[in-house]
Length: 423
Picture 1: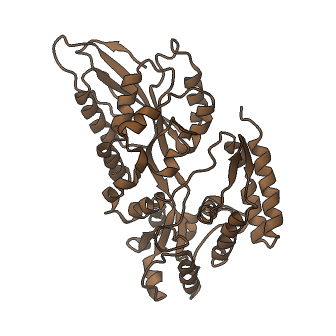
Picture 2: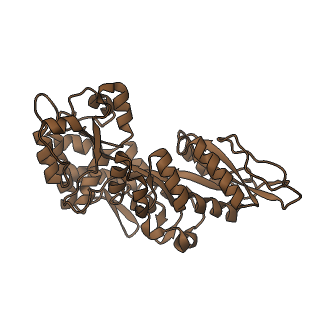
Picture 3: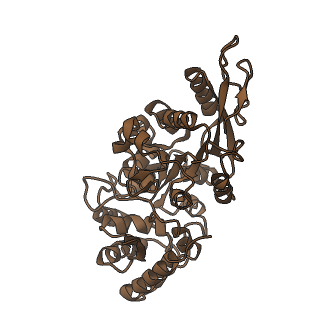
């Protein structure tokens, strides 16, 4: 929160270990804006440069950036939001939160309404939907998109060439045909675990379905709709073209290790996983490529689950103007592009995608992010994931059970979980 310090003082950024520029002489007192950012979201070099430029542009403000761990962050943020203004002077004025975490903080009533600021000149019309939608409650914007990451197809260029595949697929039907042609000489056309429900979600959204919908303030599971069932049917066809286990997700075993084994042509993952693959199998250096998850038609990529971060401002801040200034700077085209290039992220706006066009994996992510979505915007969704009925549903259908029967059962469980308030 805001602290008063002499003009000649220097408030250091905890991560950067460097002080901002402070005008000399007996100038006005400076206010400190405390910012909580998550570990590894931004590099030390980026934060050094941002802090120096921000403090130069805002002569009455100093930044105190405090790096947080993801483990246990939910409880820590909730505690900070619940603290009254008088007791919160050492707490955060700006907080980075996961995009799907915003609804739970909104429900607690501890976030500042940033609708007017975001509508004014922050590029709201171009925000990635997968970041913007979870930060919004009806027409009120609480979470401001910062950066995104999402799944793409990582593929073996050499195996595509050996199979005579001259171009990456642009549609889902092409993807099935190409994948089938890659099942040669002991190779798997694709490794897709049976419980990769994030990837399934994209296929459901492509068909016009959803995992759950709200009606009159009540949420209900919708895996049993015709659209959602069509999404699962495509997943079933694609998954059958490889040897992925039907009763496990992409981390059991870790698909990076499976891909590194050298007999898999494709996986669906964030581009950064390619580094782990090459570390385990250096022979794959230079052989990996990336393309967006194909959609039903060639005019645009398929929908994907969008992960990433939003920036929020606690309602109990006593440095409102300074906090808004920090958010405005971080989400600006200049700094958002800088962050994306530095960290291999997708920028927060579709219009900034050209800034990462030179990096194949990030460019593929950015193309998919334009069609991105997030999980249902309700704080109770965490209860669904805690005992995930979608995974069990997928395994049952891939093992031969009736899709409609299993979809109704899973939808009922989702509805029940969403009716139980967290806390």
